[in-house]
Image 1 (cartoon, rainbow, N blue to C red):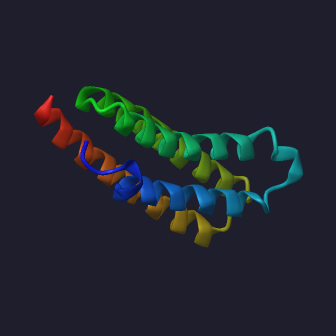
Image 2: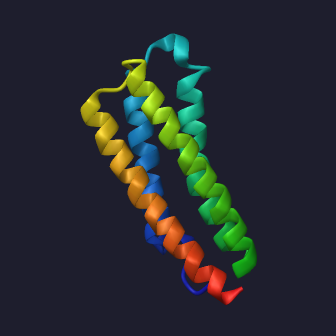
Length: 120
């Protein structure tokens, strides 16, 4: 891999999403600290660090495997965001904002995985 993982658009967007998740979950009920707040934060951080870790392995095959983990976590994150809205912890506006970012990251992940799959 030629450039550092910090230069990857997918990593940058994932970092922004993590910040957004942390910010919105600050308003969730305190009884959810060990529940949905924890799950949302773990999922969003997992997306980001799996991109970074996979990239640092300097193997396209391993990077692809770590991107698969990130894809799984994106799906989990999407579900948790929708559940947060159903529980009225998240406004409709914030749900739409975050789901758009999740969708964008998912598309980039899919594209990156397709590109890597051709090379491994």
